[in-house]
Length: 402
Ligand SMILES: Nc1nc2c(c(=O)[nH]1)N[C@H]1C(S)=C(S)[C@@H](COP(=O)(O)O)O[C@H]1N2
Ligand SMILES: [Mo]
Image (tube, rainbow, N blue to C red; front, side, top):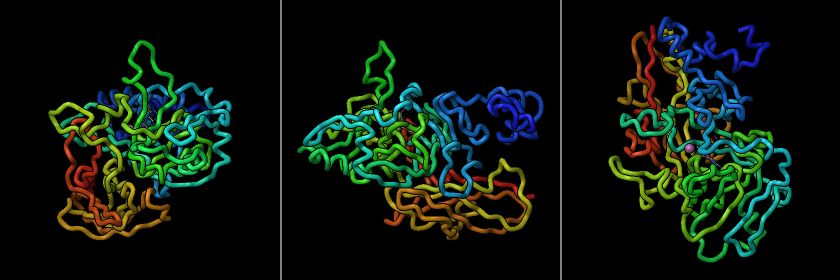
């Protein structure tokens, strides 16, 4: 571990004891160990500032927060937050002059292109939100849908600062008549030789989402990083990650949904065995969900006695009313305590329940209820893409006490 103080961590970690212990493989030997060590991929350059041992690198465009790395301080530190890019991240040069970044606002009475400098004059608001990929929990689908097999770590709770979109819209005369959707377009350079609509990151959400939306330039107290959409991001609180458009270049109020493939066919709740199509529900608002972040099996056997079962719970666009915890695989439940600051209805709440665990194997589960009375589902809703997994059963953890 000493070496890692003097050398960049990501070079040292590949194949090192630290990397294996981060994987929970400290006790492994031989072929399994060699294989696991080969599987430790370095962080991609645009996210090289992140904490290597807090993250699982699925690919250069998909980084997942380890379940044990969320901590218990509500906010997910930026250097531990997951990353998901559908296209390669833009060149870092787009951050060289942040204030000169432009966004075109269309489908309003007086459409216009504004610079980030101009946006800063229109207002500032701060909101804490759960940012979660709609594929979070896909790894629990027995049907093995294609796409990253995320466990729980394609999510985090972060604080955004920026201008409320409704302020911008008001300054431009209001939404034009007949508009039904709020459509955001990403500013990535598109690969050549392909139909732009097949790769463009452009998403539509119902126009009512404008009320809570921000054009954000700051995350967790720092100028927005390239990895998370800097210099400017459309944040749609309570909506699945894909609707939170990074490097946003265009915000349009539109009568119809975007024709981009990522909207028309991607991220649809397609029944198993069907084909994705635009008439199926899109992944928009997040459902009520919770999971346990400790204790976890990967930390090794627990000692008999008092254990603090803790985790996170959120309700999408609704606040969390309560969380129950089961230590017998869902047969019986007890109310956990919500702890830590309440950062509003779009943030997650931490919960904790002290329990006595005797020697044996225990399946721990959590089940959240939102303020509207919606209870976290027991079972996932099967679908082709492995989206919207809120199943408390899938998210249960089994620990050994010895
Ligand atoms: N411009 C743009 N915005 C995007 C994406 C993208 O590829 N390009 N990915 C989306 C998806 S699928 C998710 S889950 C979130 C991920 O946000 P993060 O990388 O900041 O964690 O960004 C969304 N916004
Ligand atoms: Mo996503």
